[in-house]
Image (cartoon, rainbow, N blue to C red; front, side, top):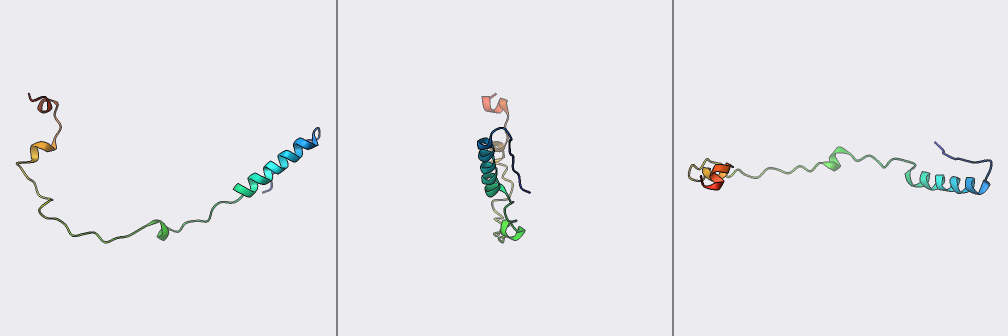
Length: 74
């Protein structure tokens, strides 16, 4: 696909437009190469679970909610 624009009234403007079109085509004339899915994905094995950190702690559970009344001390 070649894009060129010429005018009959002003040949200097037509030359400038042609050179600008050629510069755009040289820079943006084709799409970049495709990136394969394997190059976009990194797979790592998961680490071992921490059984002590995943449990429910009733003594510390009051710090895990947001309540305006509790924040104000009411």
